[in-house]
Image 1 (tube, protein in one colour):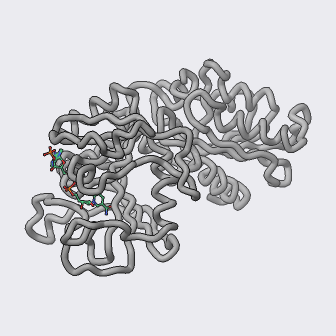
Image 2 (cartoon, rainbow, N blue to C red):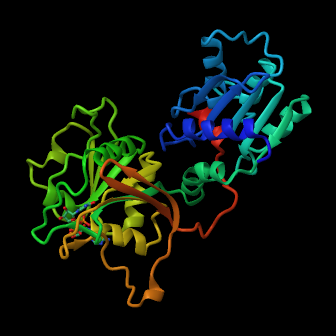
Length: 359
Ligand SMILES: NC(=O)c1ccc[n+]([C@@H]2O[C@H](COP(=O)([O-])OP(=O)(O)OC[C@H]3O[C@@H](n4cnc5c(N)ncnc54)[C@H](OP(=O)(O)O)[C@@H]3O)[C@@H](O)[C@H]2O)c1
């Protein structure tokens, strides 16, 4: 990217987008710039039924005292091509044109054949449009696109492990492997997903609540669906049955069937918290899209390994992932990775824009 102002604004727009949930709609962020490249407004899509990122950023600019009737030289830097569909909130192209935005910088084009055209429409109206094709912007839409392409929720496998790869000690105890900062990160990421999923093994061994709680430990008002997969019953007193959030028990051992049932319920993103055997079944079925690994600088030397059997017997069988990020979280490290998408390409059904409009 040649233009450092565009580059900085896209970085910011990407950060804003990531604040949004991984639910029915893709994550989208937008930054409105003044003629000198100064940030006038910021916005991101906060989920189905809320304003699009472009509309939110323009509203933010107005709220900061900038006059939308005098927008000479304004630019909008948006992570995803603006929609041109009429829906509950109106097309984003119209909002940008009505505001007189002169230049629009797009991180990634809309991945659906039917939804494209927002950039062309803006160009036809005289707006200077730059499409960057930034890999990070493509990456942002990828979970949404993949879910809709395969008509199953996007799956993120999360685990916590010692440095030598154990997620529980030999006696089954696993609380706590990581420290409070990493655990707070888990709650923030859980909150972005429609559902949190574990196997009956974890449900029985740990009796987890799987709710999203704030720093003080209080549950947030909006909770993801709690999902248990497996044939065994849960005891009546299980915390998963305490009513603090909705729980479904899917009595199957087929991850594909479980995801199909969740898709039918409207679940578009799943936070898979294990345990090792269920996670391995998801991997064997090719149903994991992203990995969030919390690694503690601790050693156990024996115990339960973070992942069950994948059928690999030699190093050449290792499932090699693409590293997408790594950073320190308090006294621990988070590693982000994902398999390479074997079936990239257009999304055949609804568009991100449609999704936002119809929500
Ligand atoms: N550190 C971490 O991040 C972390 C996270 C989660 C769990 N853990 C630890 O992991 C341990 C539990 O391990 P786990 O492997 O028993 O837990 P799990 O993977 O949650 O549960 C395994 C059970 O899930 C059911 N299941 C459903 N579909 C399956 C499939 N396709 N393949 C295999 N099983 C399927 C089976 O039970 P049914 O017989 O009922 O069908 C199976 O016994 C605990 O000690 C817990 O603390 C650690």
